[in-house]
Image (cartoon, rainbow, N blue to C red; front, side, top):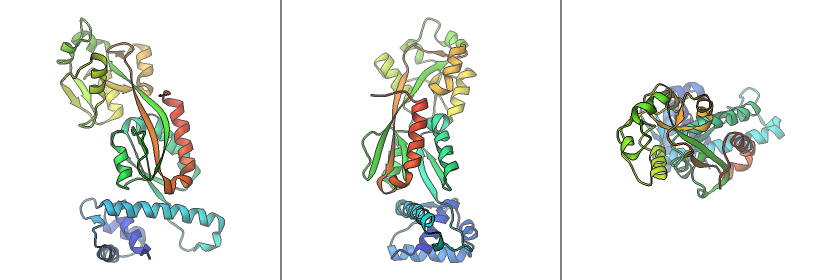
Length: 301
């Protein structure tokens, strides 16, 4: 049998980041939390919590946390039908659902979907942000129950729903275009014009260059890990970059930004993948995600 008090101690340490905060949340002493976690780790013969600042879950610890999320959803469902099972003096903690998405989706269309879901339920969400090509890894490792990802092939144990594509435009202000591309955007000019890159995983600028010019071009770049700041960087003339259509369409229409090469937008297909064991209980979230995506994304395929 699963030692649920110990498992909840592990989950609370991971959620709060420390044994002390977990103890306050569980209304026990830090030593009690430490003992529960240690005993469960000894029983399993595996480390579940990486001690540090903050404390984080190991891969096996993540699997345990996801299991508790599913148990929490089942208990909520059961209490709705059999409220007498609950202890009125010990109300159940709200369930926190771990979800992964890419930064550009979070900064454009995904947050409204989450907002609709959280207003309609008592669930909390813990959103992890990673590149769309890597969020599927969070599902594979059991770190999240659902993810927005660029992977269309179902992760093992998951259901997949196509969402559409997030359209990007390579943009810069007119002054930047005149200074760096006075005779047009050429491969030679790109080797000197500074761009903006989100992080080491960001391949959008590289993919756009290869699709537009048929080859890879190394160019100078600023590193700026923020979706909104990407647009601001373009508007202030720091550099050129690939920006999501929902954030720049008004700037393009008003002439504040220009496409580097007209008609060369880049569409990135996105998919919603959700753990099969939790999929039925996350139907409403899936519905909200699909509806929000269809309002902002473009059809793909």
